[in-house]
Amino acid sequence: MGDRFEKLSEKHIDFISRQHMFFVGTAGTEGFVNVSPKGMDTFRVINDTNVAWLNLTGSGNETAAHVLESDRMTIMFCSFDKHPIILRLYGNASVTHPRDQKWDELIRLFPEYPGARQIFELNLELVLASCGYAVPYYELKGERPTLGKWADSKGRDGIEEYWQERNTESLNKKPTGIEDDA
Image (cartoon, rainbow, N blue to C red; front, side, top):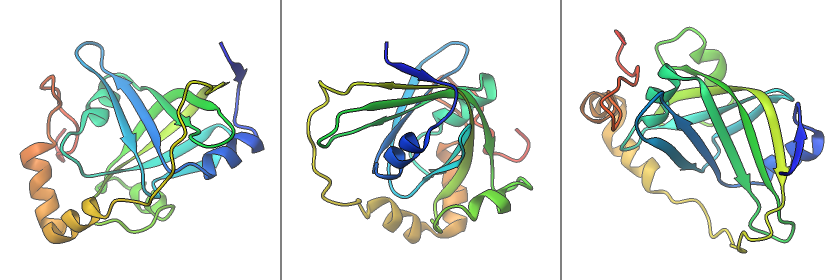
């Protein structure tokens, strides 16, 4: 079952700060459940009950579609080193797009990435820490430069065109909110 907490402790925050990858899980009211791995410098602890993460442009936009339909989100961190732990953050999510007034406030929390698409905030309802005894050891070799190079080559106009071509609806044909009129 694991140890349950109402909010993040300093120990949890320290653990999160040392992780290079996290996973985001969401689901709409029906259709596919989505679990996405995330990396780069895209996660921030706002306070002990709120976190935010920067969503970079990718081939799909499932998380945004799901949050429009159901604000439930789970974020999971796994330790791949000496001290095994799995930390899950459960709560209600909201999404901010570059067109939204709050964008300027939130985007300052992150490095500048040309493919920045949305920022998700998660209001925590439950923090669950459990053992990671079955999680294998892995060694970080570094961040992949591929996404940054791809976004740089497209430029902002090309990225927004890509959103229109590939990011306006989910696998289940649900809107993602990437368009202004969504």
